[in-house]
Length: 286
Image (cartoon, rainbow, N blue to C red):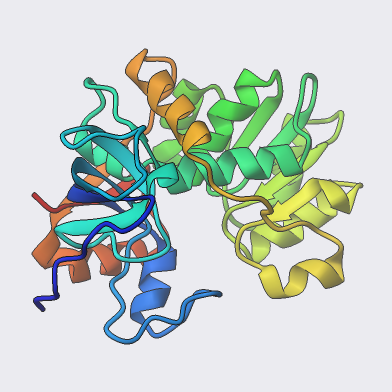
């Protein structure tokens, strides 16, 4: 579908998109869910993370110039050739960070840091991370290790070597998970990040004494009644830029498992809706 090319207004920049990340959030938008605060008419264009080249700046923008390579975030509209966002929503892209990594970075790292902050993960903690091989899990494992925590990560057996490379102790999903985790952490589990929902949350409730140190990314409707947390806080370009720099220095990894051209966005959604796989999916726009 052809839409009118957007124009940058006061305090905004227009970015010629090179790559965009794919998330379950996007699939929900495609299926008809309307994010809070969205009142735009149909058609709604999914995608809330991107990387590309600034090709227009609006009045009052002085910190970003035309031609700058950036990565950033939005609420919608990243699956497109052009996107307009506030200039505060973008940060410079290091030259050695691939476009697909830059375009798919924000949701994983920002969610992971907000979650680990919410759980107050620190030195000496033992943290259980469910779906540890996914994009948020990959970031959370590394962040937990950087903060001095012991990290136990749930994943399919084929991803266990990958988790070991990230610094986590891997454990398989399925029946008996709680007992397997107890065997790995006889001293107990201090905090849990539920990146899967369902059985993962039940196991977390069984293992972690303080429910305020359990955070779910999926079971939002149950969270308050159970006394567990959901992700709080807002995304920031400063946070995003820190992780882009860590990647550029080889101090953080963020794998892309597959890329799709924009015209195959539906296939990307089919894959993301399986809720399985290592790392992130990205769409290449140009």
